[in-house]
Image 1 (cartoon, rainbow, N blue to C red):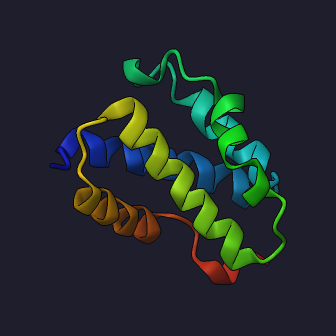
Image 2: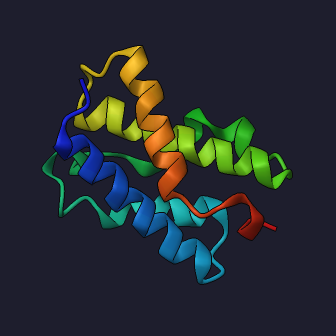
Length: 112
């Protein structure tokens, strides 16, 4: 089940990513900054190793299509929430979480 707290963390991660990416920071750096900047606000993220998280998605980071980069970003945020914040989220709820993240992340037309 997705808790309100899970949704709040997902939204906070999206806001952090959106802010950095909108300021011209590349996707990988925006993701690193997103994870690191939320460590102090969310205790569960305190021990997250952002570089290791990105290493899981390293092959996808090399893609050049904006739609693929956006999908990868959604998957990374979902992974962070389902791994570090609430590992009890079911596959169905994980899918719903992805929909929430998709609605919060910068729209595809701004990824070029």
